[in-house]
Image (cartoon, rainbow, N blue to C red; front, top):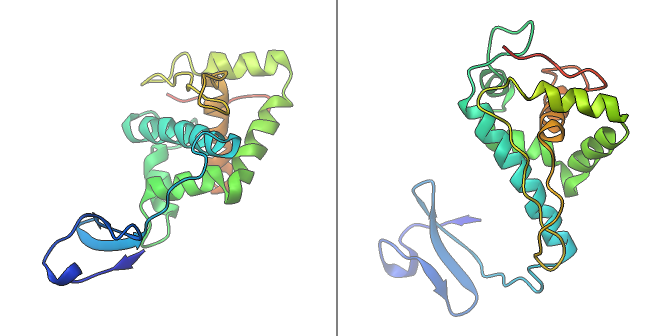
Length: 182
């Protein structure tokens, strides 16, 4: 995204221009980008991307608002994520990038690892979220065409967070036994 100074010979510009460019502000700076019109906004790939973003958004919200810490930790997950976030990145963007991965590969690996758990192991992850404050809720999902899909359960959402924390070196790779937060 290009940063611009005095766009269109003015001090400020916003909106599309000539059907090719879009002027806007990002973090207080004037920017310009190419106008992109999605060819199929409800394709399977687009809905999958939206679903991943919904889950990571719910996790960002939880990480940002909880004061709970994992067993053996003195800092909240947010403080620990901030500590490993590279300079120039916002912690929540870095967390999202880590949780989703290139082309959704990390997210897909996390959901596959959760799917490989047995029913009692999944039940343990569901139970682990019962005492977490604020509550981690199921996350609404959509399917191709924009219709309602099967929600991601709170236990799976918690598992995805732990998977991401393990990739950041902040937790063990999640398995059959969920971590305890207090």
